[in-house]
Amino acid sequence: MTHPQSGWSQPAIYPLKALALGFFLPLIMPKLWVFTLSALAVIVNAELEQPTNAFVYLLFILLAQSLLLLPIFIRFLMPKRSQLVLDRVSSWLTRNNRVIVIIVSLVFGFFFLFRV
Image 1 (cartoon, rainbow, N blue to C red):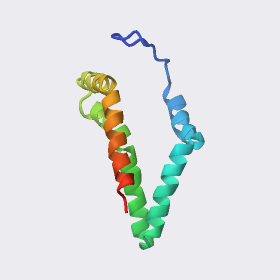
Image 2: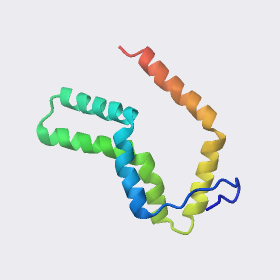
Image 3: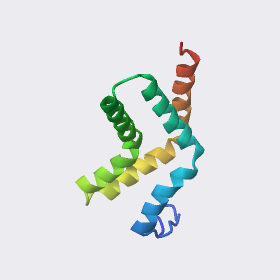
């Protein structure tokens, strides 16, 4: 499948293969493990009751996945317009990638610099 504006081609992927990639790929990503284990440590160190721990961890999962779930929800809510909306968002992110990285890096840099 070729993207009409850029000529970039995307290999066809079948649902079962996508599911397998989505399940096994995170197993070999060290940044994901560090992020998830750090979140678990913070939740455990908060010394909440067990049901609250489970709820907070599920909330963490939902928030961590929210940017991935958003396009899926857009696709289900607006099946006819979703392609146009998602293409526009993708184009905007591509055009402004450098500025976004700089701003996010500054925010996190200042957060960790001035953290007490």
